Length: 191
Figure 1: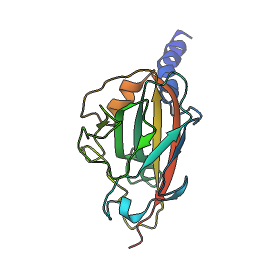
Figure 2 (figure 1 turned 90 degrees about the vertical axis):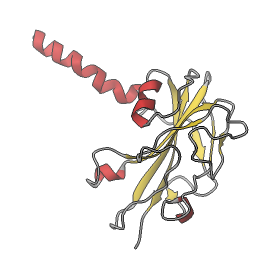
Figure 3 (figure 1 turned 135 degrees about the vertical axis):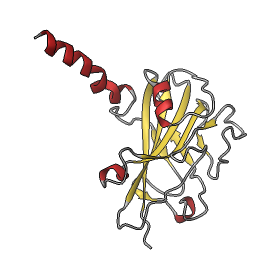
Figure 4 (figure 1 turned 60 degrees about the vertical axis):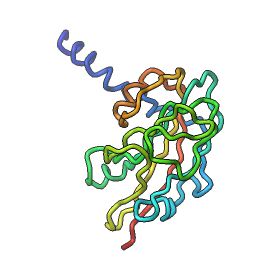
């Protein structure tokens, strides 16, 4: 019995890890873009096959006590179809001021872009290990890929340094997530 209790207590942190990182929270933040609707198609221009221009995002209905925001965009479809073991990360942004109501389209891929109203914001490292947005670039394999643009409202201004990737950002946000919101887009390469 003692071994069973020890084994179960070791599993509890793993079982609740997703919830602590906001992955099991109900999305209460409204996230939109002017270029596609939720479950809509990401335009070619915003793909890595096109101009690789980052999409604009707006959000509303932030929870009370929000001190800063973060964004992670990834493609979970690559796991489902067996291309990769974890979702491919297309964009990581953090240290977004709580006063911001969105991100402009065509955002610089500099690690620390100078954008009015977004002082201190940082483009983290995407799945290629580079800062900034990397648009959809799935192979022409007949699969419709999914791009989850998830906003995180945080209860603290974490003032994180440049160079974090998705895993490092999730670790830093652990225990600070007040709420989340999701805009989901799709893209399929037809050639």
